[in-house]
Amino acid sequence: MLQVNDIRENKEAYIKALQKRNFDANELFNQVLQADEDRRSTQAKLDATLSEANKLSKDIGDLFKNGEQQKASILKEKTGKLKETSKELNEALQAIVEKLQQLLYTIPNVPNTLVPAGISEEDNEEVFRKGDIPKLSEGALPHWELAKKYDIIDFELGNKITGAGFPVYKGKGAKLQRAMISYFLDKNTAAGYTEYQVPHLVNEASAFGTGQLPDKEGQMYFVTEDNLFLIPTAEVPVTNMFRDELVPHTSLPILCTGYTPCFRREAGSYGAHVRGLNRLHQFDKVEIVRIEHPDNSYKALDGMVNHVKEILDELQLPYRILRLCGGDLGFTSALTYDFEVFSTAQDRWLEISSVSNFETFQANRLKLRFKDEHGKNRLAHTLNGSSLALPRVLAGILENCQTPEGIKIPKVLVPYTGFDFIN
RNA sequence: GGAGGGGUGGGUGAGUGGCUGAAACCAACGGUUUGCUAAACCGUCGUACUGGGUAAACCGGUACCGAGGGUUCGAAUCCCUCCCCCUCCGCCA
Image 1 (cartoon, rainbow, N blue to C red):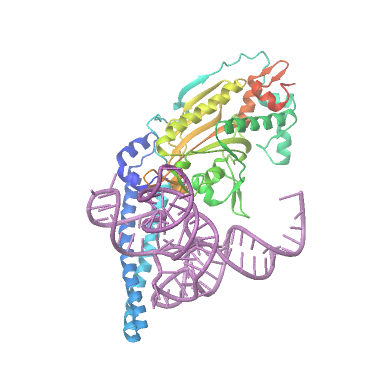
Image 2 (cartoon, rainbow, N blue to C red):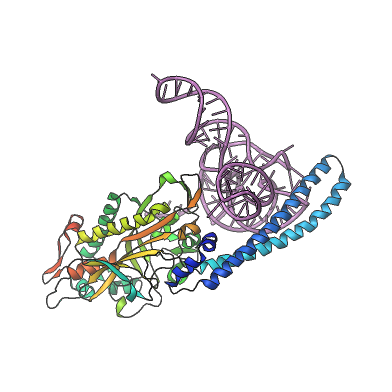
């Protein structure tokens, strides 16, 4: 959520930047600033009223002590009116604050200057590409066929147990997944990230803190009995470890990584694009999260991009990096790079990582602050990225590394799998 | 799930109706002392909103003692609801 002061100071620049999202902020900003004016003047009136009441209370106390009951009861009458006034003002204030919040919730983050204008994923900007797209031999198969052929993923079984989008991994398929998790975590911890195991269910405050609420409520599974959400990404529990924290600037940056399953309702998704591992209700992901000093956050973002690159280089998969355009940029993000691996058999790119800088947008909701060099309390910058989301990496491996004899496991994973071939 | 106890500033912890935004101690920071270190001593030391001031320093107002309500002229202190923690019992990977 944006800060009112920032909106006031950068109104025109923000409006212009938000146009890249095709978001017209003009009217909303005016409403926000007006609501903020109302908030202040009401607050001022309320404070003055309370101040007067406090003084009277003190006087009454003194009078009682001196045994001047009558004088005291005269003053008491006065406070009755003040009390009424302050009650009214307080109610008005709460209504205004509520309105202001509601307005702010509807405004997405301001895109960074690097973000290209655009409407859809068509307008994303490819900034990097690496790896040869293998020429597959005759009879090359999509991953869901390969999964069946080698009996490593059972989609039908998942249907039976739960429903569509909950595959069962089996044998070498299961082992390969476990291997990837270990490998990714090892890469991340070697790069300085601290590994965490976090809850897979979160409360409302957490879902709100990272921006899943109120924007994406329908995308999360919700446990009504206990009022908890199944996490759509480790970003939620990991980032929320720092909710309501005020950390010294010397403790920045904070680097975290964690493996969790991710649960997404994916309401409204259908068709060929959700086939196989392309889009699941439950999938595994290793996430990296950074809490950064505002001066360093974009350097950190580049660092994260390079880190993910390194992993993909080692996996020797063909991939590209996109800078998301305004129309495709997530609600909370200021700048996002998507990583995509090429699905050879499907002849399309699959998103496997999304690395974003949220600047203070999440921190503002989270109340995640640091004490800076001058002793001032400021909002920190939060960043996160996948390193990596498993199913599509698996799809990429299966499809790109297929040979007529079987699937060749990327060398870097072999120490983790204990086998180098699936046949 | 049942019974009881408790949630106070970075930490420990005092505080049962006004003199308490909150003692004391520890930690932290600044300084004095010192060949260096330690010790000692002095000082500073919560957060948010807001008014004045040069958006610094500083001065003032309001709110905050788990959260939200209530009683009262006045609440950390009394009452209600919820959340969390601890102990015992039950259940259990």
